[in-house]
Image (cartoon, rainbow, N blue to C red; front, side):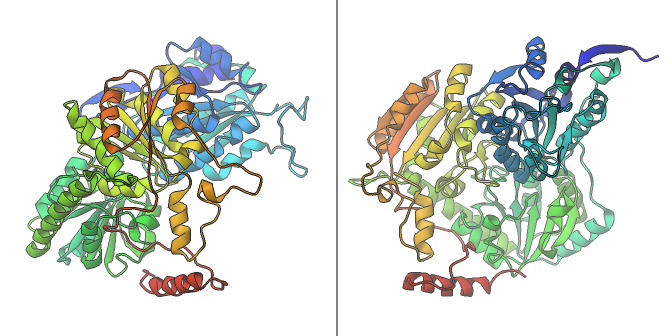
Length: 627
């Protein structure tokens, strides 16, 4: 007879999470057995405090609980923790029913798009329905079993509602399996009715001794491998597009060896930046709409695009107009991504697939002139990055590149190499474009960008999650004023937890990135910059971000110029408490080098001649798209 232990559903869930272990490959190649769940972010309410809250308190020594200030913020921090750990560890988040739960839907969508693990444990209404409707309950007139948590169904990889204790024996391991699987990886949701959380059950003892999770690396099918090899052997000017899958597979050394062995230049997506060290002779830098001139020139000239571990998002492909002429080969662990745009598929783990493919290509190299030209273009772009980021503006407001340079170079002032020590965090606005082009990442994982969902407000919370995962690194959040205003409460959480982050706020007084897009589509400046949004009887916006940050417990200062920012960054690096540095910038200047067309639909009819002109240009650009 199987030994059992009597616990509530909540106690069993927490004990299982605390027992989970994973084989984690560290960036240096060493292997450690670590808790798979790095902790639980919790904001308690009537839907989870009595059940799950009691269970978490009892297990806090084995499974830490972190109190946050905003449900979306804590979920974003959990996602950042998982991303920083290359998906080998995750965190859980729990909220009450109602707004606490729906606040996390945006984060679930972020994790879904970015293929990142997140365990959502929202409270739910009573399964007995005796007190219906309870506080915050959504009532559906046609379907009695629907609650606010059903909003999670389209934005999670796996959804279940635990209506009886025994159901957890199947649902919880299944949720873990989905998060751990390299192809299925994404957010999961176990909705927990508040009465069911408290129900007791006799659980099998062996349920609380789960097997160690070990990474699965599926190899390529032999037929697909043969076809991929034949396609590359026919190429004279191949180009590798490195995506996030390179990092999640920890295939950076394999990618470097492949590129060097076969003379193939490499360009990087936002998620794949850092796959190859910034100063590697074959690294042409960022690709696409936010790409470098070296990378985009190669994209226009190549004959085969070898996409490794990328979703081929429109920013990376220039809406499929940048290299629509080339043949496409996609190596991806997820068949859905490998099969996009009718490309040649190679379904496999990135590291294993690259190794297999390289062996089948023995003796083959790209055209020597192509490789040599790529090296020359890479060197030219690296020198140009130095020029752009070390320029100090005179008698004018700085723009993002000059701020990025001051942040980067401040590491050298205190004897550090920013390319290896800093982790930069960002998500939305103009900064992703500038950082994609200009930030120098020497170590895989030191560039942390949410540009899958480009979620405004991710930055500060994401910085906290990164710091929880990499406490030995300097975590630098670079964020615009608009995105900071969206969600900043986890700055206070970072202070409370003693997890220092450095936040650099670029204040251009509005949504400068979107205003430029608005103008480039022929539109008038409208509803984006703060000074343009003051109605009659209103008052000009005046926000003191440094004062706001100090009110949340951080140390903060408003700096007058780029040299002052560099000095304050030196000080911030030596501090122990979270730091906020604010600098006024302009949105009228951007890095003009590089870039590619991006499809944004322009009105077919308008009273503005500028819009009509933009529409004609739009139609012409669409003729270059891959069909």
